[in-house]
Image (cartoon, rainbow, N blue to C red):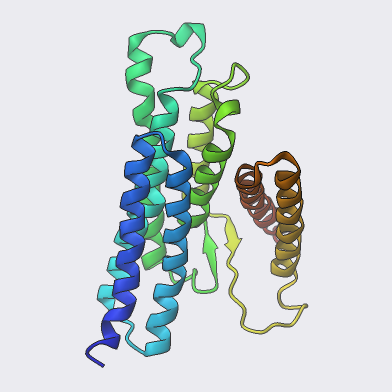
Length: 250
């Protein structure tokens, strides 16, 4: 028991270390490396709670440690990626001066602040046992990691610019704390009628990722296209959650 009780916290610390590495890589413009470690962090984040429940060693310390690790991996790391992107993205003429070059990158840390709010809200909100209210931080971090690592050439092209990037930051910060229910991939039963939305989402994601893989192989850019596919899956998740919420209200 003395050994097994430390397993979940050890896995959580692996998540935290992945977040630290992702943050450092992002500041050094190593976007693909940062995204890979965000994904690894998400992998550890999934299994720490699972192992705690399986071993019967869940506790308050594990909950707090999990939130701290998530804050780094899914809050600070994507913020660092966006910060670095702001230093290379195009600026329109009216913003082409040292003030905006200096100030705009720091708006990226709004993602970290709103991720902290999201995590704190999750810890005290009794409504979020089988679903989420607002976008979960791992989905947000994975979206930014996938988008930036796969589409840097577009994001730094004349077709995109700093105000557009700021608008995306603000929109995703709002999604983190909004009162829109978003489904979780948790199953009380495997019945189709109880999980239609989840199964449809998984089917769509499977098709998107297979298409991305096939396209990546044909273009000899497997990782780039898979990353775009992952970003697309997060967008599908958001749209399906919002659509389900609107349909439910009607």
